[in-house]
Length: 293
Ligand code: BEZ
Ligand code: FE
Image 1: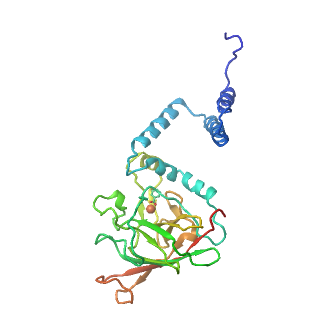
Image 2: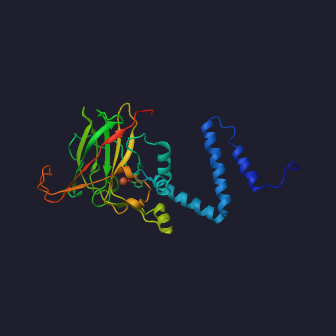
Image 3: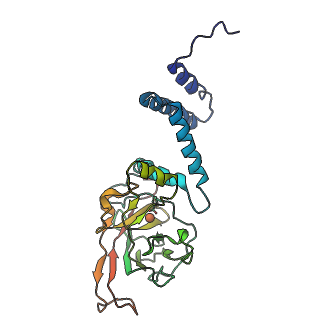
């Protein structure tokens, strides 16, 4: 029976697709999908999306999926390059006053970095870069030192690459986990991170090139700090001298996360043994918000 059918309008399709999720038993899933339908349809209407453009978009998403491996996550990269990762971060993790702000995780974090003694080095390969001594104290928002905090750090080498991207580096190079003692203090040797290009040899790189965008990120060190009773923070320490601070390809820079790699002469106290060039120190406390706050 087709007697009660009438021509379908664009509006009818949106209403029907939205209603198709009305019976979803999980209220949050229902809410997310109904809003997704409304916004996707609204987008298609607003830009007058053509069939050819939608086919090209599907081909692009298919390629993005094909570019994913156990060492590369092109969808995270796409989310990062579209600013969506940072938007979700800002919406979900507003830092309470005084707490260290969060930023993107990025695709190069690897679980299970080597546990290293406090004060030791993450450098497992000579030639990784110019030595940098990173130190500070993990504190609560009340100023109290946090004992037993776990720091998980990772960064790139002078060749711009993270160990996970570079078969030429030992897998644990420039990665490490450190646990604070009673004073909450942390310290480790690393190298000065350098500006680098996000992987731009795949679909996301083609999107950047097609739109005249550059792939550069400002030099930074990644750090995740967790401790019982506190909210985990995933963040970066950025180098103030980077020319790309104002144009990060993934929109991850927050002014409070920018700091100074202070240069030192080789004859200054604390210089690394056997190094006769400039070395650096970077000092920064990490302030954790209380859990559930
Ligand atoms: C990173 O900082 O490691 C990163 C973040 C987003 C995209 C690519 C790399
Ligand atoms: Fe990074």
